[in-house]
Amino acid sequence: RSLRRFLALEDFEPVARRHLPRQIYGYYAGAAETNAAHAGNSRALAALGLVPRVLVDTRARSTRHALFGHAYSLPVGIAPMGLSGLATFEGDLALAKAAAVEGALMVASATSLMPLERLAEEGKACWFQTYLPGEPERIRRMVARVAAAGYETLVLTADVPVAANRENNARTGFSAPLKPSLRLFWDGITHPSWSLGTFARTLASGMPRFENMDAFRGPTLLSRNAVRDIGARDGLDWSHLDLIRQLWPGRLVVKGILAPEDVTIARERGVDGVWISNHGGRQLDTAIAPMSVLREAVSAAGGMAVLIDGGFRRGTDVLKALALGADFVFVGRPFLFAAAVGGERGIRHAFGLLQAEIARNMAMLGVSRLDELQPMHVRAVG
Ligand code: FNR
Image (tube, rainbow, N blue to C red; front, side):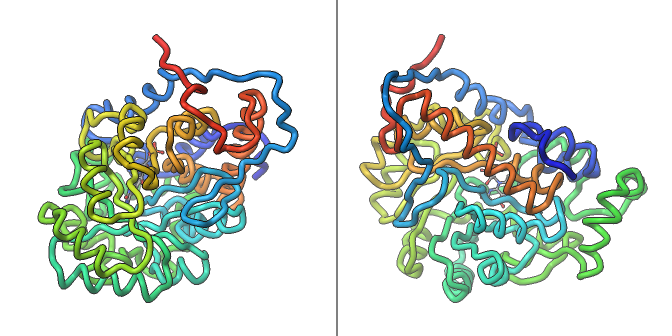
């Protein structure tokens, strides 16, 4: 498929929507309860205007950007997303490979359908996101496994103490565990390009499984235990973070923080970075938009890395976050839609679009390097 008509990240979604069965599209696109947190993310970005500086020679501009001592080709990475393997065949690997080829960052997900070892080896993934229970023995096992695979950065997601209320999944019939039903079957046969392509190839290599949960390896999408385990993290607290910090030799990032007070606690407990996020509006509905707390988070961080995600779709969105002090931006859903539309090529195309937007807008904003961005480049609008 020619990707020429995909001019912006948002162009992938309508095509992916037609291609994917309703349950899978709904799981990817959806959010919790009223969708207010999800909608609020884009609104918070739209409520900021850029203030360009003119007559600056920017011919030497570059979108290169460093984080934890690595230089990336752009300041945007792929957020960890579960079940990416249903967007395209071996989707988790496609995301990792595309990012590696583009010199970009991709975070492998705890709920991916491919072993984290394979994502590190074949996909060159260096960041792994985990969901851990409040049980020291299981924490030890998982941290050891991630370290043995050679990952450099561990992301602990902290905003999933319980499974969220995603009514849209119930409405489309995307139940967990997946229950074979007439509706699923119907959606399968009415989306033959997905069923005969992605799904048939996936089944041919074995039933899709959660390969990277801590307690076990291999429960399938059809297993009730797997689902219960992912959604029951409510025993995890800061004392477990101390244990993880003690066990994990690499960089440690806590994802899903919104309160500046929690940024302070995380800093005091020795993490390397905080990831300001409301999980793309998929956990606590009406949770404040990360962009609305960014400045406070940056000042509480006191120089520690501040990462952010939620609703970023354009180069201008990314530039706003960097101007307000974010060190790196992550994008979720559009990369899954790009994967569904064009596999690894689609994902690379999405990176290319973002990078071109950022480079072009840097010129119009009057900056040659991303670290020249300042709060003066952004103002709240009405
Ligand atoms: C997610 N997200 C997520 N986060 C995480 O820490 N572990 C995970 O396994 C998942 N899984 C997941 C699946 C899907 C389908 C989506 C859309 C999201 C949240 C993700 O990392 C990120 O925080 C948001 O997706 C960012 O918002 P946008 O860019 O999708 O608006």
